[in-house]
Amino acid sequence: MPGRSQYCRRPRFRRKTRPFVLSRDAVEAPAAASVLDCVFTLPCMQEKLEKLVHLQELEQQAQALSLQISQYTGRVEVREAALYDTGRLLEQIATALAKEASLRRSLELDAEDMREKSARYRIQLNDAKSDGQVKALEHQLKFCKKEIDRIDELEFASLMETEALEVKQRLLHETRANQMQLLEAEKAKSQVGRDRDKVKLAEVHRERDTARQEADPELLAQYDRMAQAHKVPIATVEQQRCSACQMMVRPQRWNEIRQGAIHFCESCGRFLYFNPAIDLSDAMHLPSAPKKPAGLAQDAAHPKPTGSDRPQRED
Image 1 (cartoon, rainbow, N blue to C red):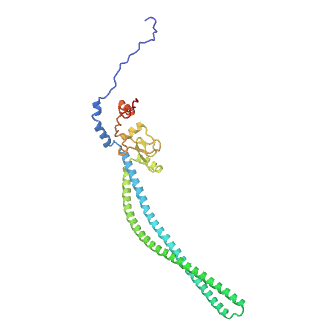
Image 2: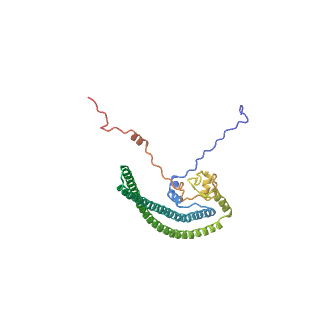
């Protein structure tokens, strides 16, 4: 054709094809059954990972039982410490009572000495011949009387302190008796609980040894290596997140994990395990709330005035 380049070609016209769309009946008919299947049907998981999950549960039970056994000894030690503190208080009160008794004996001797002096001064006062001797002896008598009164006050204060200490001593003796009863009860209870938990711990250890023998050697080696770095080597995946480090899992891995593949977290390195009983994020989608039509929404936003709200005409 004249005037047209030899490199010019006719445009190609592609045939329009309609996309493949399922009918409405085909989509809605099995809807209820598919939701129930998603909720009540567990996904296929590999047997090896299930054995490791069971092994982790047994190890967690063993750790909990070991901690509980150690706590029994701590409870008994707390009771013994309380009993020891009460015994120390009783010893301190006994020392204080002995001190007060010694103080009263010393005060009684001082008071007796002052009474003897006062008696001698009275005899000398009767034989006094000058006014100076009389005044001196009267002064000594007054001093002896003041000292006797002071000693009596100190002795009375010591008696009051002794009475208060004796009340505390009786209360502490009662407390010590109660603490001894509680200690014996705690020892018996701890012994029963310790024996029971030791039997359970031995059973868990046997089950753990059996589970380790049944586990895959390569996965078990990785499990042990991660158990040294992490307390929990296996983490569940909830809402496409690692439950240990909260790191998002890529969609492709997420789908493979739900189908039963074994993957590790890219952040913390733990085994990723999907438990449909915990994660129901993709099992059921609740319908959203229906939207109001545009006309109803506009009427609700701008209500029409009633007869009482209309402006009245002024004559």
